[in-house]
Structures are given as structure tokens and as C-alpha cells.
Image 1 (cartoon, rainbow, N blue to C red):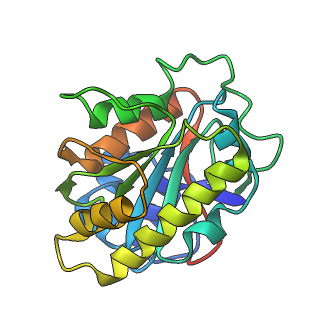
Image 2 (tube, rainbow, N blue to C red):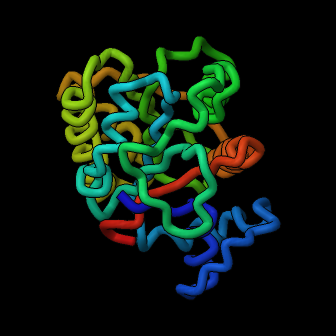
Length: 226
């Protein structure tokens, strides 16, 4: 699976050009709402997979390369990669090994989930954060993944969940995405929790900065729809 820095995708969308510089100096300016809004032709909804290198079943799933196909063209799935990706990077069986010794307490992805539940108890990790828009202050839904002991069960949950996200993104009334998605998840017996209301743009920006401090990145697949 090929992935690219999410910042580079935003830069490309905002510049309306295929010539990626890979040298984004001012992330705060890049992540202005008007730039994030330009991603809407590429994605109707977003997901963020939060996992540590020790979460083997989830790591195996991400390495397996089916994420783009499981999410389809309407859902953009993000995750923290333990290397920079200003240009396309191949995620394979040798990937996601650089941060094996990084504690869960300092892992950028885990910290991002804790930030979403800053005023309540943090649910079990790893997990999947589901949201509709990065340009506005919104809540999100969180689906835990730690209860699955192998890659095939993670894949089954991801495929079902991402299918519901994609369907809801195309059918929900304005401002009703999370409510409709919560109903769909409940009907399919997928466990989830609702996060605190959060400025998602600032949340993602903090996570990206934390990843880059450790020479990593937040990335998305550049297969379907990109």
C-alpha cells in the first residue's frame, strides 16, 4: 500500500497542482479551514486508526495492504507512520518497526485519542476514530479494536465499519452524520463511544507535530479516490 503525508495531500488540494514540494514549513497556515474544505471532493468522511507497534493484529492489518480497498473512494483513512512521507512511501511487512520501543504513554496516536476524551475516561486502545469534517469543531465516534486477537478479525470489523461510514456519508442529512452513523453501528452491534466536542483541525495539527518530533508523519493511502 502506498501512503503519503496528509499535509502533502492538503497542500496538493489547496494548490490544485500535482507538483508536491514535500517542504511544508507552516502547518498552521496550511491547515486553515478553507484549505481543509478543498479536500471534500476527495473524501466525504474520515477515519483515524490509533495503534502502537505492539498492537500486532492492527499492525498486521495495516501492513496487509487492503486498507484502500476496505475504505473505498469516499472515506479517507489516516494513521501515524513512524517515518516521514513527503513523497509516496510503501507500507509493507517491514514497515512500522521504528517505534517498537516507544511507550504507549508517549506514542502520538495514543495521545491523540486521549486528547479526544480529555474530560472523560479514555476507552481501550487501539481503536478507530470516525468523523465527517476536519474544518469544523465536531465530536467523533470511537470504535475500539483491541478485542480482536488476529488480523482477520480486525479486517472484518474494519470492512464492516468503513462500509457503514461510506454509506452514511452519502445518505445522512446535514449535521446528522454522527447520529446516523451511531444508529448504524448500534444496529450492527459494533461497539463505539462518542468523544468530546473537539476542534478537529487543531487536534490533527497537534498530532502531526508530535509525530514529526519523532521523525514520523500522519499519512493516508493514495490508492482509491486520490
